[in-house]
Each structure stands twice: as structure tokens, then as C-alpha cells.
Image (cartoon, rainbow, N blue to C red):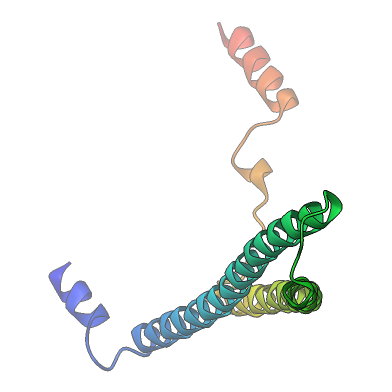
Length: 155
């Protein structure tokens, strides 16, 4: 047994080398997918940040508009700047949302391709499936009845 185990771990074992190479490939692929997913997460966080800032801009803009509505004096320049920032954020939100959707689709497609590639490798590396005729190992109901009848006749 110890001899078999040492043979398995010897440095000139092609099966072990192949196993380690495939394991390395899988680890690299998983690392790349993690990096892609991290990039997608960063975009989502950036989108949430822009939406948060947008909410604050709307709040300021609303307060200024209310002040103008009730007759208080309002700095028109500040109101105009807020409207410009709001418009810029609306465009940024739309662009980020589109980038996120594209990245999600690209990531899903990439994961599917990787899954299919590993599935093909697995099937190629797996031993061929042998079909076994189980009737050789089990008696049929007729055989069982015949053997019982033979046993009864002998008694």
C-alpha cells in the first residue's frame, strides 16, 4: 500500500501532473471570474453613490423651489447649478445602469462558456461509462418460481 501511494506522488506521474495542471486552470478561471464580478460590484456601488447624491440634489432643489413658491428670495444661479447637476446625474445614472446590464450579460455569458469548457474537460477526463446487464446478477421472477417448485418437488 505504501509503495502504491509513493508511486502516485512521484514526480514523474503523468496523471498527477495532469490533475495539478487542470486544478491550476480551474483556479485561474475562478480567479478571473471573481475579478470580473468584483468589477461589476464596483459599478453597482458607484451607481448607488450617484443615486444618493442625486437624492440630496433633489432635496436641495425642492427646498429652493418651495422657498420661491412661498415668496422668499432665491438665488437663481444656485437653482440653475442644481438643475445642471441633476441633469448630469440623470445621464450618469443611465450610463452606469447600461454598463451594469452589459457587464452582467457579459459575465453570465462568460460563466456559461467556462462551465461548458470545464464540462467538456470533465467528460474527456472521465472514464468511459460501461453498460452492465444486471440480469446476470439477479434472478427473474420466473427463475425464482421454478427454483421454488424444484425445491418443493425434491421434498
